[in-house]
Image 1 (tube, rainbow, N blue to C red):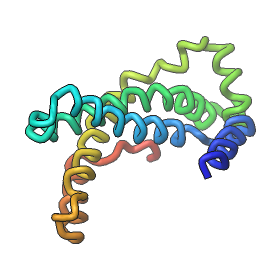
Image 2 (image 1 turned 60 degrees about the vertical axis):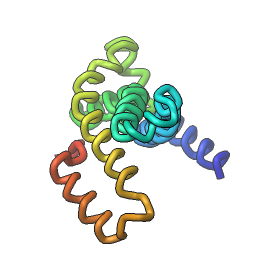
Image 3 (image 1 turned 180 degrees about the vertical axis):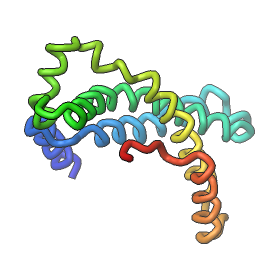
Length: 160
């Protein structure tokens, strides 16, 4: 199954599909688990339990930083394709065209604003998901509380 996912993802990149959120998701969830363990190990067993909230938030924020670095080039090309008619048909022809006109560093122009909207939202959501997904919390309470939290810190809007 993993091999099939990689092949489909690479095919989408070559053919101009939209692997942008796949790249972000792969980094986000993989590094979130890595950083939770890393920060827990740094804190030690007692402090890992005592400071679980901070560890989850730091792990999520750290993972989101990396995930957004993976996402940013795809997003900038997507925005150009959507807002400049005739720029390109998709990622496969838009990426080289963008790099030629703006340079490779131009792919990361929007990184800081992306961090500004993604890190707070995703850190809050990941914490709520981790904290309220324990078996001791009733199924209905989980969804009610989680949705109330997401009303306070909603996911960022990419489309209007």
